[in-house]
Length: 249
Image (cartoon, rainbow, N blue to C red; front, side, top):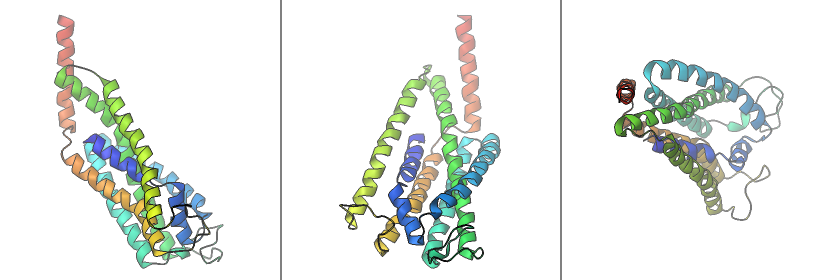
């Protein structure tokens, strides 16, 4: 279940290649805004991740942290997609930049404020899910040791790493196939590529839509993930008993 959760998240984030960023911010009309936008949202997202995994993961367990984070990703990224559909993304702007119409910053628009809040919340909840993976791997190692008496973190780490590398290879290939399908077989879109509905749909799907689908997979996977805080307490007690028996022998 952890592999299902981690693999779908990895696929969604790995598909956010530079060409997809060009499409999304090319739709907005000013690719230079991408760097400034990422700076704002990433810093606050990291703060949310730290607070989230500490407050939720520490008190409710890692499984609950992934569940809450996944639902957050679903909700906030779905709202972001709707924001792009029903409002004009070209009016997005930040101090020191021009918007998609070449106009200098004159004040925060509704689209800018709404997208900023949704992006920060979406990135923050996504980071909560990602930061829960390493300690969950450690829990699986302990669970396997209590179940079979064999402690094999190398095997667990190898399986996880193999899937991680496989997804890293498949993601750009998937994006390339979709681009070829919509007419970009010889050259990827760039900032000078004219706007089209197919690019709009492609950009939103790979930048936001896959995160929604991946997080829904997380929700389903975590439903069958058995390592709750109560279960891990039993696991640690079992391991402690096994150690005492080995020492007595």
